[in-house]
Image (cartoon, rainbow, N blue to C red; front, side, top):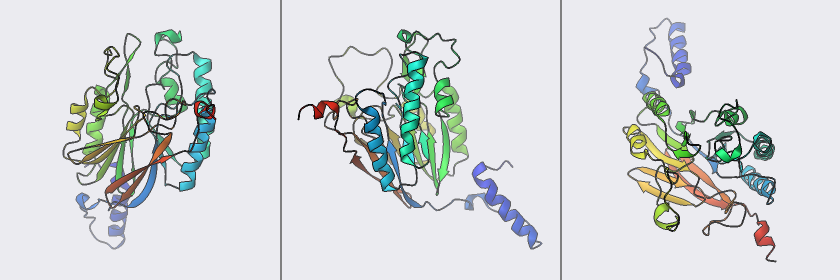
Length: 314
């Protein structure tokens, strides 16, 4: 029998205790389900940090407000920088440096999801050849970390997905690729069916944005970029598991859609309207997530940042 990494330590403890008293090491893996705890964490997304537009100050202001709330950790929903996709290495490294420096204001563990502005040089006008060692997601992996992974905290299982797939014609599509889908299925096999699961993804799996926020005058995009194109396949993989919520970014609006037993929560952007004030009435801010014995609630907090545009009006 191969033990899940989350069961190993407890199994070893049970086995050792049984041996110490001369007993037989008998245990029930089904009993090894930790009761979900109660705590707060913060979900923030779309910082789009850059040296222009006072963006670093806006991020720092937001991060210090998050730190003052003393959550147990933070999750960053993608689009750390503006921009790595359409520029050369010097600019891309500079904005990643700026993000990493500014993130220190959080003073807490941070888990990251990759956004569509984070891969390096994938847009042809960047002038970056596909042979560049840092091309696409390699720079992000070196500077930030893995693009998809899972972790556990106090009885909750968190799954961070990578929704950004560069295309051969130097664009990108919102998709969970086949390799990742296989990994997701394997990860869920090792997760108890009753354990509360929280997903994280940059481009939303489920959103109503296209009915109220998209621009009908814009020509249709070549690839799906507002929502993940293979969402039905992804959600099917979660069947039989307790997916209580998915935290999403990308759209810069604060929105919750409830589908079956899952809340799909799209967070407003730290940068608001790309550092030009609020976006569609949603001010610059972040989402506080409160978990209580397997139940989830959220509230949206504004950072208090005033953009250059707003300040110039006074």
